[in-house]
Amino acid sequence: MSGAKLSTKESSVLIIDFGGQYTHLISRRIRELGAFTIIVPYNRLNDIEINSFKSMILSGSHMSIENFSKESLEKAIDAIRSFNGTVLGICFGLQILSYYFGGKVNHDCGEYGETKVKILKNDPLFKGWNNEEKVWMSHGDCVSKPPQNSEVLSVSENGYIAALKLDLNGKVIYGVQFHPEVVHTPKGVILFENFLELSSVEKNWRPEIYVNSIIEGLRKEVSDDGKALVAVSGGIDSTVSAIIAKKIFGDRLITAFVDHGLLREGEKEEVIEMLNFLELKPLVIDAEERFLNRLEGISDCEERRRIIGEEFAKIFEEIIEKEGIRYFVQGTTYPDVVESGKTQGSAAVIKSHHNVGGLPDWFKEKVKIIEPLKFLYKDEVRKIGTILGVPETLIKRHPFPGPGLAVRVIGKFSREKLEVAKKSSKIVEDVLKKYGLYEKVWQAFATVGEDKWVGVKGDSRSYGYIVTIRIVESTDGMTANYVRMPYEILDEIVKKITGSIKSVTMVTYAITSKPPSTIEPC
Image (cartoon, rainbow, N blue to C red; front, top):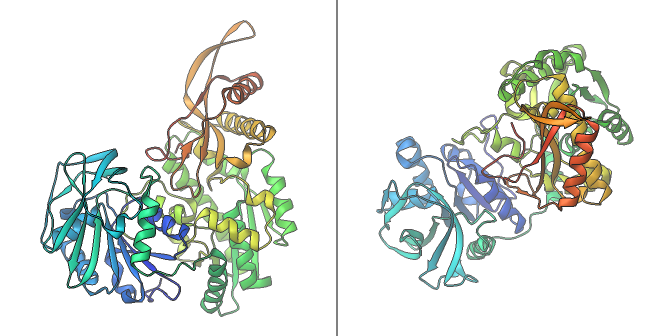
């Protein structure tokens, strides 16, 4: 933000991020209810006008209170004291409120997974809840003694405090130990609705409103006549970013499409045709050999991501120096940011994205990075894409990682395994399209591993790769469930893969949701 105050003109709910990986999921749920959210790390609260918000939510954390800087936490508590609106602490948020307002927090009293809680008080926060409900717990510490001037609203089946209400000089502060933001808490959305009602928050957020404000804001930010470069992969994020950039830079925008050899089968031709239709006129760069030569034999996925980010940066640097580029536009979205641990809080890094963490620091020093979508989620980007005239085929296209098929090859990277992943994924997509299921799932693809399995092909012993099929349903990529795919469809996919790809002898189906797994294997 270059040290500037964050704009809160359209905001309603402030979410203070203490490093929890679910922080953006809290944000997503609130937006689904029609209220805009802004997430700010606990150690950057001086960057905002805190009382321009109607309500405040404190996120969870993967750390305990003593793992934080005492000074930073105390500053956050001072901000909470000075806040005039209603406050809700979730998980760690409950613990920090209890600790600093006279309660006690203990270790080794964790609860994990589905847990029953009893509602003890008839409070507006739990309007619509039964006396006993299922919730999702994920905590190692717990509140052992409630703070002064508080009342316990709920306890878990294990006897731990599950929710409380604190009166702080006439100001209402709530805290819940469970996670209302995850789907595993069935009535979590109702709790958020109640909280917004208690906070008198206006539900007037729509993604299309954001488009106008972001274009207006970026025009002020890039008021000079400098040129811009946007890298387009053919996905919805980079394409929408390019369209927005075109409205800002006009003919000063160069659209670059890099073929790194890691695309889906037939994707290059489809992308070029689509970009020309949108009048983005891409500069097509054939860099397949450049990328694949560097990736050959690399096992570590983070190293692959680093290599890919570095090669992208070198290619873009060549364009920047040749064309005198001053701005670089990226299709970064909120899930990219949180999974890369780049919310400037203390979130643990899950994986680096080429948009956020993959580009080397030396590249970022050469140009000013423009990220029009970094506060939006995938389904919000799709809504904006529809408004901007993006073809429906692209709107409904499955998300695809920036590093491409490189993250769907497990173990040592090789061109042979890349081809297996490419052909297998094409079969998965084609079969789903045949039965009208492709557009009904979030992602569907195949991965190939390092292990091999003995098989029989052509009456002879064969030793081939194991391919894993991954089909999930989601709304924003932050969480996902595996799809209960009919056996006859899985059977058809398996037969086509093993029948057409000689080097594959075993096909499996991934039935782990996110969390605990991620959608992509690495």
